[in-house]
Amino acid sequence: MTPTSRFELFSFWRTSATYRVRVAFNLKGVQPQEHNVNLDGGEQRTVEFLRINPMGGLPVLLDHEAGQTATPLTQSLAILEFLDETYPTPALLPTDAHGRARVRSLAALLAADTHPLVTPRVKKYLTSTAGFDDAAWRAWQIHWFSTGLQALEQRLAHEAETGLFCHGNTLTIADICLASLVVVMRVFKIEVADIPTVMRIMARCEALEAFALAAPSRQVGAPLA
Ligand SMILES: N[C@@H](CCC(=O)N[C@@H](CS)C(=O)NCC(=O)O)C(=O)O
Image 1 (spheres, helix red, strand yellow):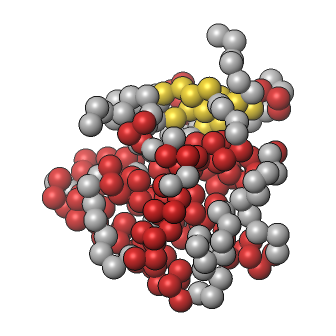
Image 2 (tube, rainbow, N blue to C red; image 1 turned 120 degrees about the vertical axis):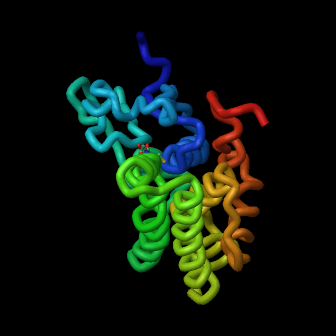
């Protein structure tokens, strides 16, 4: 089939990591062609998909301008930076090196330290091999969402660079990662106490069309409310 966009994005309605990429595409005003990979049906573990991403995770981004033999891009943070370099306006990273390091550190707290613990493959292992029932899995989810978001709260509340957004008054990839955890937490109906700064920034992000359009409930395949 002929692609209708420069970019093809392998996605699923509720994935946190794909939400990050969707928000970035919306901010840059670029529309990828999306292909649904049903995580609930285990499509990420098929031979065909593992050939594209051996880690069996979403998102995966194909760039048709990179040439026939170009490797598909994986890892949402790498894709966010790729999009930011490809479409520099609006910039999603600060102009100074210290600022960029802080923003990447906040983003990694969420995307690298927190999110991987609550992915389907971790659930699959814990429930099939480690004896977890539904209640134990839910307690695990609540524990790790709380650990990550409360650590983020401590940082945002006490670090001088926090402003209307995570870093000053301009949107960065740290805000995209913040929102990506909160939207998925809501999908799983999990509440984390004592994160007022996180939720203040979330409200500001959600008021932007780029975030609203990326909401899990608005994606193809999302259950009807
Ligand atoms: N670190 C990766 C995470 C990718 C990832 O694990 N994505 C989840 C969805 S949010 C997934 O596809 N999981 C499939 C599975 O765990 O089986 C990124 O940021 O892109």
